[in-house]
Structures are given as structure tokens and as C-alpha cells.
Image (cartoon, rainbow, N blue to C red; front, side, top):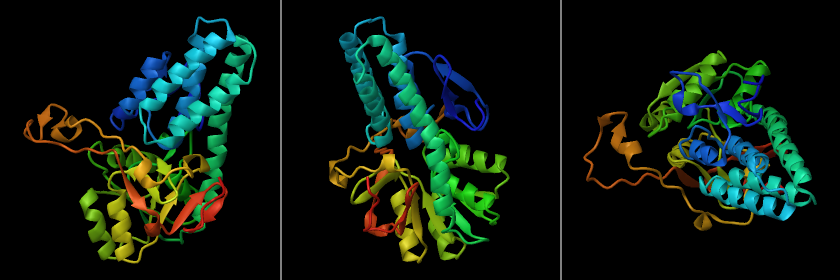
Length: 336
């Protein structure tokens, strides 16, 4: 991997297969748009900012692999690839944002070769900006954490979910970098255990104290006054709700009941000012994610399963939105 980056371009899209962690650290190279769609759908690549970069690189990949040499034909192929990529995870707005941003850059050029150059340049710009954005976001959020704070987080909003540094974990990393002593409680995050597999792996590698808990233990931990703040990332933020990994809403309710601040850390690219909660499609995933664990059967195969990937937390439960442009306290929203 390139220093400090979890996704980059090297005649293809190079990244980490997150489904293999923590048991194996496996780097993969994606050289076809269909393989990118599979990697996104299977969560080899996941996390809102990382998906933004992946979407941008996906359009660059489509342009580089295309056999068309006229601008119109190339653009049509890139747009078709973009539709495939955006459809792989509809709730995560960063994915479509990255795709559309690179398509706009390419469409502004007159020749196919210039379109290919522009697509890759714009995708690289998205990735480089993500590193700077997360660093700024981290500095802004670190001010909200006191020295000695215990922080609860859900799912994985660290460097694996971004090009680097992280959003929610970026805030924690920035606080530690500033000399603060921070302890983290990581929820396992059922059913795919991104908290236990990814967040605890990241923090332990960084020597940041982390304790893994079952999702259902979070409210009791708050009641025992062991949590000073909750920080999560986001996959989409509408004008009235935060969409994040399912289980986030429960933590927000518990935090409100126990007088604990609930913070959301996300770049401006995650904000969707045009829509409200009831207009967003929430991705539903395979029943086997709940019914099975590897080869083990955890539930009768004829029992119906509802497995949404995300839930929506009403904005009134959010104490602060941490962005690269500052900290905003709802109903105040950042300028987008």
C-alpha cells in the first residue's frame, strides 16, 4: 500500500480486501468495472469516503479500458459504467458523488484522450482531497473530546473507510496526536462485525486503547457512566437525518437518555441537502448475513429475515456535526 493510503491508482484500483481482516492483510488490484462493483457489493471496499474515491477511480478505469476513440462513444460507456457503480450501494451518497464528479470533469473535454486524462486526474484529486479533509475534520472534532475521555463508536469510520486517517476514528486519532488520553469502546457491529474486525484492528495497531463490546451492551455501559461521548461516521446526511450503519439510531437514543453527547463526523461530500429521510432508499442485504456464520447455520432457513444495512437517526438526537469546515450544532447545518 502507498504510505498513508488505503486506496490508490496503479494502472488499476489498488486497495485492501476488508473482508479478509483481521485474519489476513490482503492487497487487491481491480482492473475491470464489474470487479469493482463486486468489490463494493461484497464490502471488500466500504466506508463512505473510500466509496467516493472508488467511484471516481471506477470511471477512470472505465475510460482507460474502453476501446472507443470518439468522445461521444467514450462518454456513453463511462456513463453506463457510472450507473453500474452507483447502483451497487444506493444509500451511500459519496459513491454517486465521486462518480458524477469525475464524469463532469471528463465530459468537459473534447477528445477521448483528453477525457481519459481528465478522468484519472479528477479521481486522483478526490483521493488526495480526502486525506486533507479528514485531517481537518479530525482537528475540528478533537476539540470536543476532553483528556481522559471514553468514547463509544459503531461500525468502522477509520482509515479503512477512507483514503486515509478516518472520520470518527480520525477525530480520535487527532485527539491522541494532540496529547489527549482517549479510550475507545468499539461495538462489534452485527451482522458483519466491522467494529470487531476493522475498528479494533485499526486502533490496536495504533496503540490506542480499545475495548470491544457486543452491540447490545452499549446502553448498559452508558448507564454505568463509562461513556463520555459517542462518535460515529455517516453514509449520507439529509436535512433531517443521519444514515449510518444499522444500530446507530439505538446508540443515539441511549446517549440522549443518559445525557451523553452524540457526535457525527463526516465530510461535506456526505451531506445531501436536496433530500429528506423518507426519500432515501435504505439498502437491504442478504438474509444469509444473519442466518449463517461461515458454514454454521444460525437460524432456520425458512424464517424471514429483514437485514437493512443502515438506519436513520433523526437530527434532533445529534449534538454536533463534525466536518472539515468546522463543527455545526443542529439545526445549524454546514454550507454545502
